[in-house]
Length: 511
Image 1 (cartoon, rainbow, N blue to C red):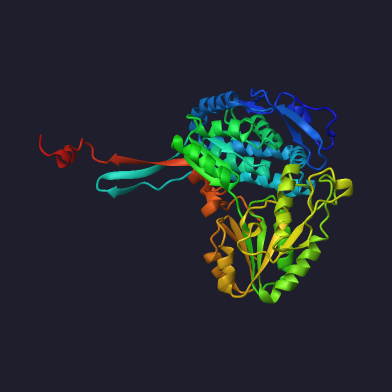
Image 2: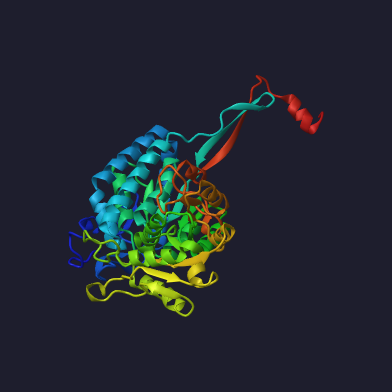
């Protein structure tokens, strides 16, 4: 069900593709059966862009059944056949790149230039990578490891994968969940966030139009409590892959444990940005602003805690604040916009709450407010720099998930690395120095799944993404992700031509 006139066709040119509903099961769009209607809201204007019927348990059951039915044939396809299908898939997404970019910017509020230049090309590259990687699902080579026996390892798909993706990068997170799973021969039921389902649905439709069999990719759009928990606990789902907050990840793990299913968790982050006193200050300031404000700070790898060695601290604070003040907030579809709104007014208020509480114990150097005027109806929040917060304060320890950077000084290298590790998280970090030995030490000792050197944020399909500690476990992207979506089987052959009666005698004695 869709609202004519609630947003313009220029902002949402693909809206007519969703008239049949927001559930994608066995190759076609359907309406949800929960009885509840939900609206996708344009966070830049507060206007409803699309309304749809949410999925309920019956929709999840239908999607899992479709995935289960499709699994034997898809798992039995050759790697070359799956690879060819994924190459066609990449071509279809590339043809529809503008539709994907506009739908992503509409539902998330991110600048269109970010969707066009980062989210959509990154997704196409990820499909192309897994199209190639599908042909390289290798195990150990065969070998004689035990007398007259030859052993080898088979790498096999797991079955139906139930995936849950977040709202901050809906298209890319759908791709990260779906692609390694199906390249390895699994089938997928994905639950996107109910705030941002549009590009996941376009993604599934593109896969079907590219010739992937019905049921290989299914989308159920519902709430976490009603659709998500039912998907995680479903007895026919062999694996759960979840990206989201650490608190919700704990709940997912609790439910998954009841059915002893495989689990992959990519959870929250609180990335440290460590600037040593020999760093290029200008590069570090530029990196901090870009790393903190990417996607309006709604990025689990965003730079959130800048630790700056004391000789550079005051200059870093001054120059970072000045650069933040030049960032242009505006309509995501306007060419000059640098920063769009947060995903919703509720989330904007949550971010503002962190900053407002910090005023009691820290200094808000710049930002710390929602803009007025023509942006007042949107979920906007100004880029914010906080200095002087204690290490144990909530703005240092908790994930704010907004355009907020906290800056703290340190004296010695030991102290800087210790402070970087002093949160429960361990997803990403960066170290800034001209000294290769200093950065080498930082990359060894900082406990995070990715440590950038003199940069912050870039990712590539060929390299893994995933966290340590409270940031979860398992990897997205790269061939390492196949470890999550496959199981290995040891196969052993007796090389002798006769039945080995002596083995029976060795175990049981003469009978």
